[in-house]
Amino acid sequence: MSVLVGKKAPHFIAPAVINGEEIVQDFSLDQYLGKHHVVFFFYPKDFTFVCPTELHAFQASLAEFEKRGVKVVACSTDTEESHFSWLQMPKDKGGIQGITYPIVADTTKTIATNYGVLFGNYDYTEAGELTSTGPMISFRALFLIDKSGEVKHQLVNHLPLGRDVNETLRIVDALLHNEKHGEVCPANWEEGDEAMKESHVSVADYLSRH
Image (cartoon, rainbow, N blue to C red; front, top):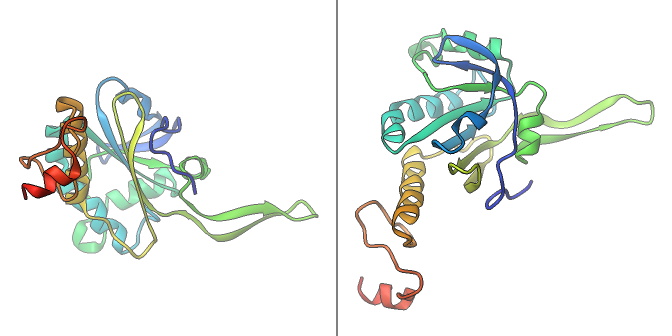
């Protein structure tokens, strides 16, 4: 598993369902370069249990992300047809109807592999047969990518552990604050809290005032 923070987010072009109803074949994060920050998150599998709670949680906070100029994009190793079918299923039936942000179909598993979050490995036997270990689906991973395409934050959870969307918003706020003011954000910082001038205020000075 690789650490991508400080590096360019891996490029991809893949099918996706957008606006909850339209399948496109050439979706790419490149469309946001120079315009928007991106929260790009992986989830393990369609038609499961924890995954829809996360997808709906991001949708519930979508206006907050958009207010900050941030695009939200999801991805799993399911097909675009599977995504589309799940999007037609009501929430009270276990579906994700109402999700409007893009959901990418990483059917070749190359996106999850390039982002270092594929759960499992594959190899070839001496007879040339393809074998795999693990479920070959993505972990619950999340990447915050800035307008230049650089990864600023990443989080990887094992399959049973759902994420906290409010914490994602907090990290977004910290990045935006740093970009706007040049200040660094200490532990548990939230928008409206005092931040730190890295070159002038030491951690000890900051803590002495709190």
